[in-house]
Length: 249
Image (cartoon, rainbow, N blue to C red; front, top):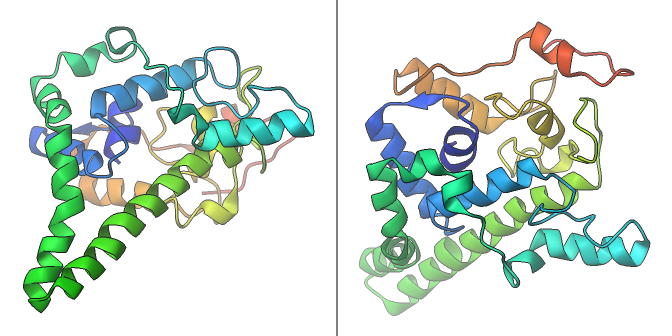
């Protein structure tokens, strides 16, 4: 909701308290400082699956060997040889936002809270070290590991396997991969996202579950966000690949 659809793509505008809240919440997912995360992702969209993309699975070619190596690179290998994207070039708007700069600098503190708060709560509720360690294992280690692998799967799987009902620019191989739809909260409808990056709903066709879009819809009803860029039939039809027929959302 925050890092991806709001800060990176401007799918909606958020009231100031909500803007700060989703920046803090996103930081506690421990995927990086908000401004650097957005800069890396904007670079990915600028060079999707061509030279310059920080995590394309097609980096080493289309052979079986190259693709296996590329899938590992896209999934998590790129983090071991990371080339940080230029924040001033790719995220100048966020660097001009004082609140987001503060959240960005507080990232180490938010990581500590995210990892240690479950253990503290588990220990206090059970008044035992066993309770603290159990909470740390499930609510810190397992939570963060699962979250990261699901996110990394969008970078890897959703650029190789799946369907491409919407037209994207030459070289871009983003796909829809339905098995990940529920656990990724709708992020695996990646083909439409690359075809129409500012759209607030990625799963826009019939039967496509997009939990993130539903959360944005709820925030809009509560008045916490506005100017949401929802898909329209005409907008979807314009993005369809030539051989695809749209189903009603």
